[in-house]
Length: 367
Ligand code: PHE
Image 1 (cartoon, rainbow, N blue to C red):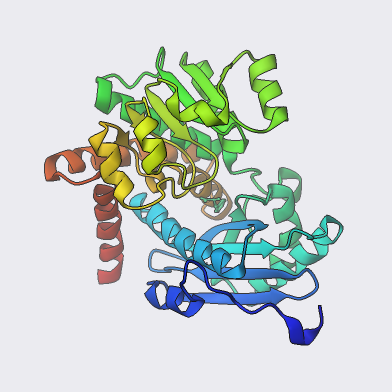
Image 2 (image 1 turned 90 degrees about the vertical axis):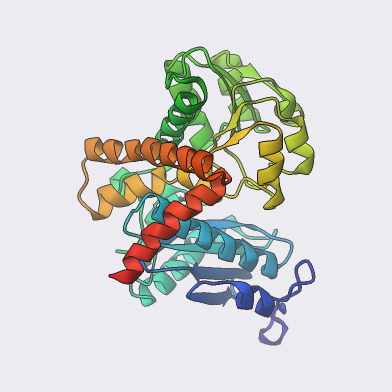
């Protein structure tokens, strides 16, 4: 591609990027088109009110760059709410890298180093860790040029490794709080839990649930994961198409977002949704749909803060593993407050969680 032919930003759902940006209530967006890799980098800084803005780096193919920008804006806002609900001293941000289907993995490291350089130039405006499509190994490479603003490097590079295990532990605690609220007993022993997506977070969660004596069902598309959990560990498997129809106590979305919509919510046969995926609901109306079906929804941004919180705490705030675990326990308390506030104020659980987050943001704004 020569210099004159960089692809123009296109319209997404009829919405021009300028309109997306105008509607967005964040602080700034850094845009970089990497010509060599034909990749768009969008770093959305939503808020630095509670502390330096931080969020994962998502790297995948998009139909057009505007869709990647829209994702960055939404996910950065979700990070603000995630940290704020937990009252953790970080602001919300996200990087979305839209690669082309022809992205050459042989040039991945060189590209990531250019990305790291950009982060270093931002001088602390943005800090990042792994997300969908990036790993701790990638963070090692990004940190070569982007340190000290890169989190979750591998232990051999001096980091605390993957954020998946602490994220899964936080989800586990959130499930306990949910069981306590619904059944009066926090124990997950004997409860049927469906884990949708047995990847980094979902796979770790399955192990914890089995240890706790829960009856686990999982669904995944990945052959390797199916082989491991179904064939080697003997975990009950349902195909991705029928995951929504399986009777269970807790349905746990641990893959990509947007899985709960008009069609899937009508099929759910669970008492609660408690999962790790970011932005699980396809649209705001889905909150009412869940409520109409008698399904208790644990707001995703309350449930899935564990990885970002534990890794950042251990790497930047001197927390020990034990202290990180204790802080993750706070997810249980926050979720309990959310459920109680929703009940007494007749709010959706999402609105209740936002109110708690907004109060924490407001307190920071005041002083
Ligand atoms: N993917 C993490 C999240 O969405 C982002 C993250 C991981 C941030 C590790 C910092 C450290 O919460």
